[in-house]
Each structure stands twice: as structure tokens, then as C-alpha cells.
Amino acid sequence: MIRLALKISLMALSKNLKHLTILLTILLSSGCQHEFINSNIVEFNSIAFSEKISNEFKEKSKQYLKINAKLEDSSLLITNVIFKKRTLYGGASARAKEIEILGELHFQFTSSIKKQSGIITAVTQMPSNEVNPQAEISSQRQLKDELEFILLEDLVQEYWLIES
Image (cartoon, rainbow, N blue to C red):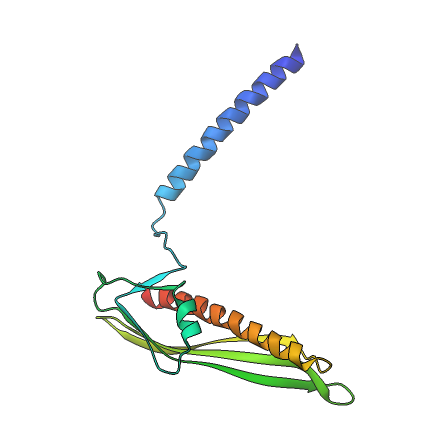
């Protein structure tokens, strides 16, 4: 009999805690002064690329950057995307140990209030493969593709930092 009463009281307590948790969540979220933003996509009135930018990069940027004609005086200009390779040597025979690839994205945000330009950088490393240079070249291409996405994500973050 005591077990049954204990089970019933625990079930009632569990039900009340569930409602209390929902109520507290609603109260706390409604009192929050911050807006929820879609940080994955940024909209501009116009987006321009210099001639140096590859078509592949332009296609990748469509996942993060959108054109919205309703917006006034907001534009983005991507002037350059550069990748630099550096080989790091080490060991007793000074052989190639790692390859480092640095990606740079040069941009300029323009709005009716301000004009902001800058450079975003991202770095990645991979072990060197002297035995199979073709595999190493293929890996470098894949790292370059990943760096392009990282640079675009960082560009979106930079935009939200400038706007806030």
C-alpha cells in the first residue's frame, strides 16, 4: 500500500515538474532581449566578385551569401581569395614533415552608414607524403576546398560582428 502511494506521489511530482520546467522556459525566453538570427546566411542588396575569383568559389558562396533586392545600400565585394602553401621541415635529415596551407579572403562590406574592409585568414595542416606525391596533391586540393568553406563561414561571422 505504501509502495502504491509512493508511486502515485512520484508520478504527480514528475508531472508538476514538467509543467514547471515548461513555464520557466517560456518566462526566461520571453524576457530575453536578444533576437534569434540566422547566422548561416547573410543577405545583401548586391554581391560582387573581382575577376580573380574562381567560378567554383562563387558557387560555394551561394550557400552563405544571398542577394535580396529589398535591402537598401548593403553590398559585399570579395576582392581576392589567396591560398599559400608552406612546407615545414624537421627531423635528423631535414625532410618534409607537414604541409601548411593558409587561405586569405579579402572583402569589403558597404552600407549607407559605414564601409568596412578586411582580410579573413584560415590555416590548415596535413602530414607530408613523400612516398606518394599524387596523393599529397589530391589532399591539398581537398584542403583548399575545405578552407574555402571555412573562409565563407568566417566571413558570415565577421559580418554579424560588424553589424552588432
